Every structure is written in structure tokens, then in C-alpha cells.
Image (cartoon, rainbow, N blue to C red):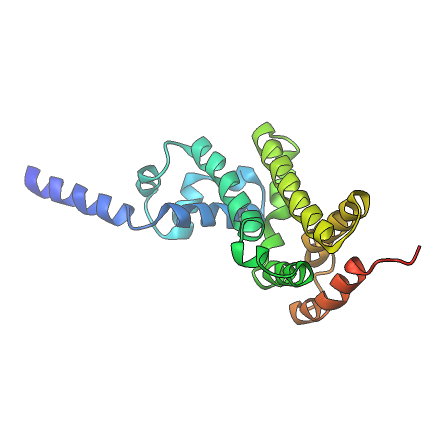
Amino acid sequence: MCFNAQVRGQQERTISKGVSKAEWLQAATDALARGNVSDITIGSLARTLGISKSGFYWHFKNRDELLDELLDYWNHEVTEVITKNSELMALDPKDRLERAAEIIIDNDLVRYEIGIRQWAMNDKRAARAVRLVNRRRLEYGRRTFGEIGFSEDEADVRAMLFICYHAWEALTFPEIPRKRRRELIARRIALLTTKSDR
């Protein structure tokens, strides 16, 4: 009897451990994209993943630890995937901007923006994470536009326009198909990288 219970307990731990930490984080990020941070519960995530709640504790101490790691995960998955991408950095600056825009559109990287930024309005740790991501995105944009030859102020303005456009275009105009948004990338980059005669 004791042996059977022990075997059953080991099997449950094995099954619970079958969902990776990244899968828990992705499920939490997707839940945030659909609603509010308060909707992210261990039970709801476990149901989404088709696993018992005990599986959660293989990877996280508690919900707070999940939320802390969720912010790091969001930073990495939607920002560092571009800003720390050595293949992108090796490209000509204009090509780099085009490729970054394609990655954003093709992978729908903006789907988390509303949920994260709403969370940041009432949570200091989320607000810090958003400020960090904003800073990294701006540094990337400024550096890229600076390489094209724009002054500091011009690079700053263009970086902000590039970031705002790509962060909010799909959310503001959801009726525009992804294919059409992708077709407009080259024109947008041409507008942002053309120097005025003034």
C-alpha cells in the first residue's frame, strides 16, 4: 500500500514536471494578453496547460515569483529578441529596421503591450519593467538611426516614431490585415530614413 502510494506520487511528480517553465511563462503571458494580471492564477494556468496545479511548484515558489519572471520573459521575448539579435545588428541600418519590423509583425510581438502597460499603471515592479523595455527600445532605435547619419535629436524622434508605430499599429488598426501591414514596411522605413533638405 505504502509502495503503491509512493509510486503514484512519483508518477504525479513526473507528469507535473512535464510542462516546462517556459510553457508556464508563455501561458501566463498569453493570459495577460487576453485580460488583466488579476486573471493570472495558478489554477487557470494549470487548466490551460492541462496539468495539475502541483506542476507549477516545480518551477516557481509562488505566484509572485511567476509574475516577476513573467516581466523578464516579456522583456526577452518581445524586446531582446530584436535589441540583442546579433544577426540584425550585422545588417545595414535600413535593412535592420525593416527586418525588425517584419519580426514584430510576423510574430505579433505587440499582443502583450496593453496587458503589460495596464499592469504597470498599478504595480511598481511592472512599471520598472516597462521603463527598462522603453529604454532598451529607444537605445536600439537611436543607435540605428544615428548610424544612418541623423543628429541626436533627429535619431530620437525617429526612434520614438518607429517604436510607437510598431507597438500600436496592429492594436489601433486591427482591421488591416497582417499582409498589408507587412507590405507597408519598406515605405515606412523609407519615410523614417529619408533626410529632409532643410
